[in-house]
Image 1 (tube, rainbow, N blue to C red):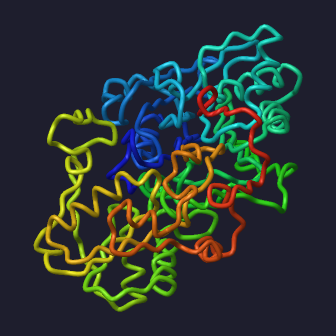
Image 2: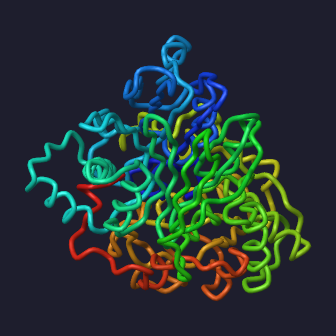
Length: 478
């Protein structure tokens, strides 16, 4: 299910969005830097992207924006970026877990209202989006999108009419939101970042010269040459302005957290650090745990690119079995591409991935992947290794079995579509054609997060927040 397999209709798991914001106190244009920041976050969403900027010294409330369907380098031209003049801005990359994949749903969202303008980028899912939406609709709101990000923007705008500052409006709106969210809000003179009280989704702060940056992952800071300052804490709102630098508001911070453990296992780039824990080290630990708990005699350990690679290295380091490369990935295939028809010989997996026959022929291979969702992709990869001459293929998965759907920002499907639901590990092994199969033990997960609290609802059915009474994922995704 690693990222070479993304966007298959039959298998795969996807994160929702990446957010990036920048405020240059010296007045320099930020659009080009936001472009590179989004480029670094492209793995978090490949469906649509957008940038909105404003000039804090120009006419108050004038926002320039550009967005479209596709990858960052496909949507924005040099001419587009040259037109986006402004020293404060916000950007977004999106993958819809469900619902409409349309330009209207691309972010950032820009609102013009009585107090001026507001641009917002959001990563996550609100559990109470339907109720909040109905409340707004009864007051006469007309919606342009089907995403809950618009619900958030409207509630902030409504609060702003009653409050003396943009940050007060955001804070009041946060008190109404239930679910997962990392937000970046651009007001005419401030850049505001906010994270839900459980910290489901990551958000960090960076600094470059006299400019401050907010980003989903620290790898985006590295890309633009910014210094990592710190993570935004779960429940915290930060306000960035030239007058006060970074102001912190922690009224909604709490002791109980629910970070998405899959940020560490799969979603985040390995060169990111989330809440003080290196994603790369987390995956090395996962591999070491698999080697301790599910050992097997073999000649070679390989990872399914990309997120399986570090876990495979960890397995190798712990077991002493050599680490190698078994797969060549076609780097020119986007995560969304025209899939071959069933009647054609081309396989979606083979288009993106090929096996190095010389590396695996005649060998007992341990293949590490980050998860098995529906099982169809794992089935094909095991077959490819055996066709290439592998004597045995032992599959090890660096997460526990998926048993429940996710409502907080990933597209884990309903239980009846999950291969692990109501099946034994032996039954799953037979379906995918492996010689043996082992999953990461549930009790090992705290080691991956360095003891930090996390959400494990997709494995146990126990979430930090009660899941919605209705399936909201098809209507109000972000």
